[in-house]
Image (cartoon, rainbow, N blue to C red; front, side, top):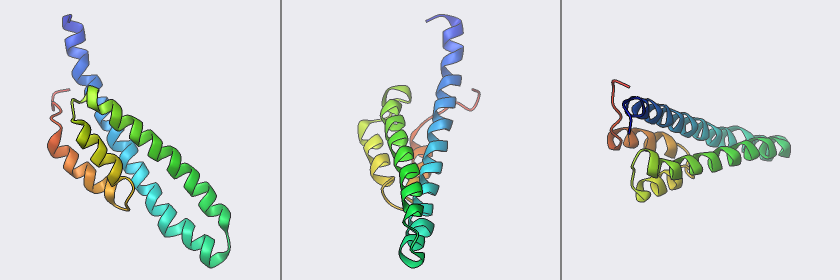
Length: 113
């Protein structure tokens, strides 16, 4: 590995980790919007399109988060079981936020990068 590659790797790792956290946060918010806004609109106001839109967006974000967690196994050297816990956490409201706090304690990202 050249010196330039050695310098760039921590920066890319930090960027990936920050993107993983961002998509986790966004997916968590989409879950809350789906359960807290779209579903009540569907059942109380007769607006099924709210669930269709929010559910589709949530689905895309869930798949994106799952892919990012699988990529994190090699890029951040996390265990596959940690990635699996992240995917399971994303199923529950507030799960991605709890997982994010836990992940911060498990992944060692250099502050210098």
